[in-house]
View 1: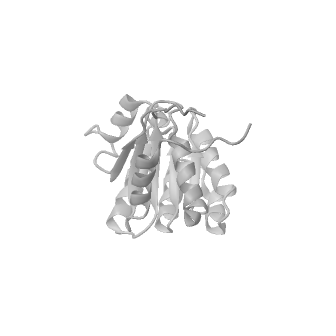
View 2: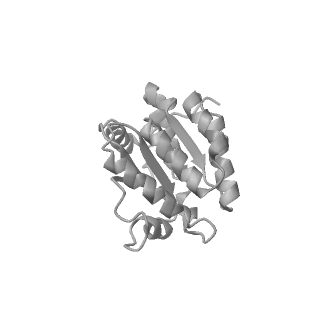
View 3: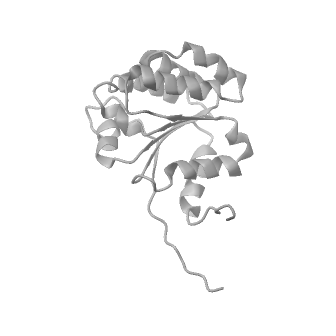
Length: 190
C-alpha cells in the first residue's frame, strides 16, 4: 500500500500559514476531538514550509507530573537539529525552567508545539500555567517579528478552563485559534 496523501485540510493549513507568516509572534490554540488530525496538520505545515521544519519544537505533554513533563521537553530539545535548542535541554528540570526555555526558543524564532495541552488543568501540572503566562507576556511585549507557540488539545472544556476562564493565568493571551473539524470525504469513480 502506498503512502496516504494529505486531503481535506486546505483551509486550516492556509490559516496556519497565515499565522506563521504574519510577521509577529503568536500564541495559537488548535483544538478538535482526539485523532482528528491536529498534529498531522502541523506536520503538513512543516513539510510544506522548508524553513519551518528545523525551527519547530514538538512536545507531547504526558498526563503525569512535573518531572515527566520536564523530561518530555528535555528529550524534544535534545533531538533538535539546531544547536541553540539542544543547548537548552540540560537546563530544563522543572516548570520555571521549562517556561524559560520555551520563552528563549520563541524569542530566537522557534515555534514550540505543546500537544495535549489540556493536561495542564491537572492539579500536578497546573502551576506551569503561571510560569508560561510570564513568558507569554514578555514575548508579547517584545513585539517580536517571528516565533510562536501552538497549544493543541482535544478536550474543549479543559482547554477553555486554561485559556478562556477569566481567572486562568493564560486568559486573554491567545492571538489565534483554529478548530480542527472532521473532513468530508468524497467518493471517486474509477
